[in-house]
Image 1 (tube, rainbow over the protein chains, first blue to last red):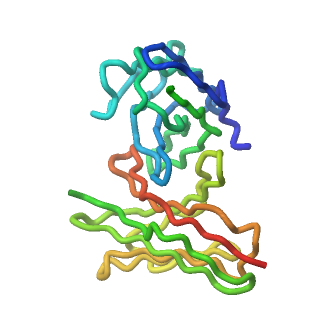
Image 2: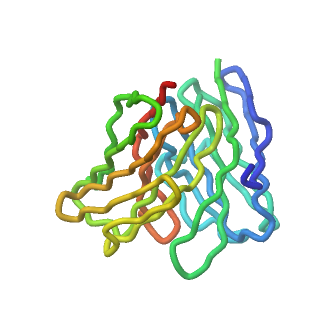
Length: 115
Length: 111
């Protein structure tokens, strides 16, 4: 257990529905990241926050995706009008800025299946 | 494009032998490479980071090398055990924070 938690661990939804995932990072970590991982692939970067500011978004993050970190602590990732192609594992990670290369600590992920 | 590539074929080896996994990169020169372990249904766990000016780094039974001439990193597990069976991911920093992962190599250690 890395100290990063995600909820729910599994989600099954029908195409067109909205889903929201939550990530609770390690409490003293100021950076929070979202990644998406499909079967047989490594995680792909989606977006990251430093405190409450969203600093970078991948082109993978279409208009249907939105992420927030309102108080610089937990974060939510919402997918609107889900599509079957959204089925994947959604991973959250957190780190503490140290002026150098930081270690990211990953949560267990939320596995999404869109029917 | 800047790629980081791992052998997608699964690696099966006998317990006690040394497992060697390969990570190749093209079209750029990363300052750092990282290796992670990922178990099924879990998030990746950081193992080791190696800088371009470090030829080799060790941690217990793990050893990582970085060859900037070959544009390659090798990840070794000595005296392998069935508990070492997992997918191992090579990764580089795209920016100070963003990590780009390879597709991973699945390692199976048979008793």
